Image (cartoon, rainbow, N blue to C red; front, side):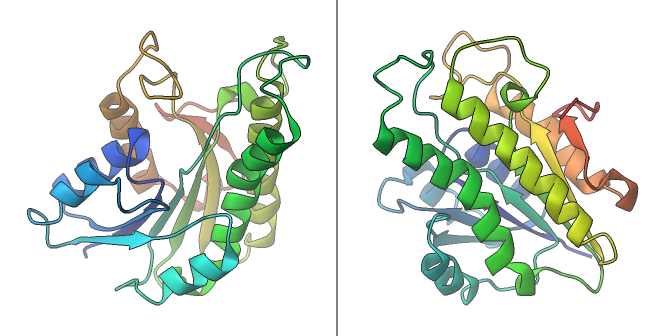
Length: 230
């Protein structure tokens, strides 16, 4: 049976790599992004893959998400909350950590997964089972000993908490909810010196998404499938 995967932030970085890989694996892809005009690479895939559906969706807006939900062609088997931003890597005194940037990061990285999952709940394939994957970061683990990227770390810790809370709510439903560290990836956010390519990250992530089982719900995984501390 052909599965449908929905990916937010699908126009660049890990989201784009996941979209490309999912299409080669013969999955139906609902590729969502806020800025369709600049989604050039994503649009190039449209003519080659009939199972690609590109949709404008802002994860910080319930109105936008609900509008997008009407355009989805099939029940969602795998929902990937990938959209994310960083507001700076400095310490608490960094000028990057101003009120606007703080709110932007919290809205995208924390409210984004919350609003996406809540508003797309009715679109999940609860008959055959759905999997929800929140792309978090090891930087959000409470075991870290660093003092930089304060707000980004806090946002990813919150994303992990949302994952855990929702996994408890859906424990008796046919829905698995987990979060993932994608690795240190060579994207605009990760930088050119990062360890792995978006393609390497996407390969590990998608492999594990497809294998998710009920007993995996509420857990935080590395992109290679190993369990990480929350």
